Length: 256
Image 1: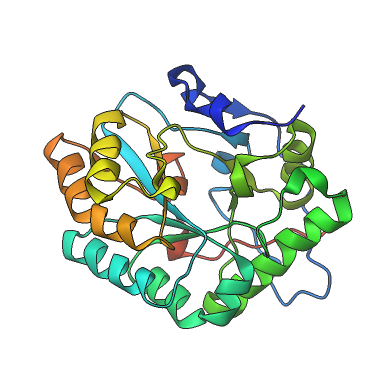
Image 2: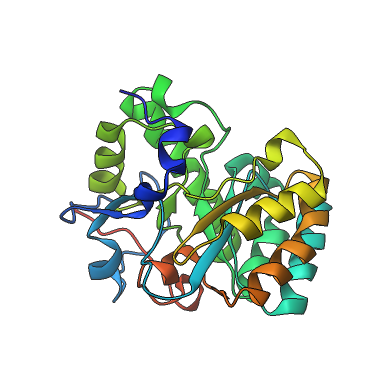
């Protein structure tokens, strides 16, 4: 059965789904170094998440579908002015087109996640085509910043549980969804987007937004300031889930 976006909007869905760490073969024809992270034990237990621990006022703001040549730099300026870290789920073909933006993301402390190469419905793909979407994107990210993403966000939030388990076993990637959706993709206006984010935020939230939409960028100063006023602190997704900030070291595939 397909995982539908609305399933993960309920408050009860903020729990973590844990499983054992599977083997991680190297990417075909990859230059990615064979190297393990000290945080493998943390992220390795997780197959799919919709949120983080709720025992402290920390959350993650995430941005899908970029990078965008003008919106993403404006968003990075907003985040830098507030010293806020975010996670960017980039589309591979966009990452390949604007690698300088990925380098700026990493230089400024943000995390980069995998959002597929061309934004298809992954539930319609067989295993080899699905892995090709993931691997091409990871390669583009590695070429830009010499780091490999450890979390995947499926386009439209659609992924079968069996696919999430396969991706975890074959690529050691955590499928990362969300539990706060301001529906900015409907373009309701910056004020509405900001209000929805601030009002729905909670401890451990993973907030969905899109840096390809200009109104979303305009909503961010109000939204981020509102979250800070409510006492929330910001972390990348990996940090929210208990790992050190991925941008401080390499994550690599393990051959075998």
